[in-house]
Image (tube, rainbow, N blue to C red; front, side, top):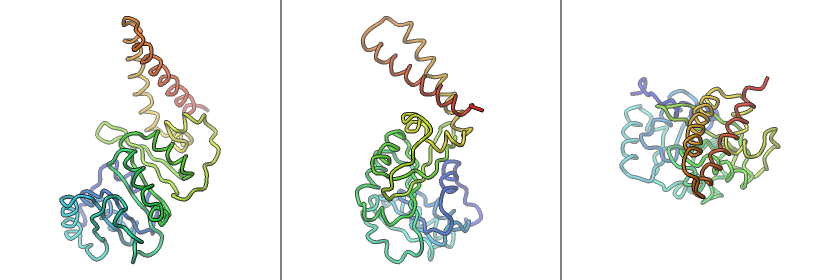
Length: 246
């Protein structure tokens, strides 16, 4: 097991954002592979694998034991951070990973127990949905986004966001606010090739929808939907222009 841990491309991207030397707390750990990988690769000296459900936690416990890491990975049954308490006994800087959930649920987890969230030096989140709204929730909380990675895994695009869970405000962006919320300042600044591919796919899809809507009989509902799609086209076009700019 120890030599055979293989993460999905999405989880590899999450692992790439874990601060080296930190103790990882993985909420919603499922099979436990992320903390196992982080410890085996020497990214983290130790880790905590947490899940709200007994079944996944039992599977994770089996994998941890097979990897020979029972003394370095603690398993906790917890709904989000509810049972984390003061995270007693964990040394050094702490990092938190939350993946495989929708943006609203991740937002609930990081805001429900602010005194626990504040214990972490970094949080790595991979919202499966509502990415724009998740970035907006971080902006509202004053949590600065430090980095973002985008990856395509099994035909789907995933965004992984690393932020500092301490209110500090956000730096002024060179891009319009809506572009930053929708697509991520860090990804736009890096001219991320995966973001570019996602934008091109979304633009082609939206243009196809717009063409069909324009050909349909005009109704108030169709007009409203067309306006939404045309706004998406405009934003995707502007984001691509920013990425392709010399």
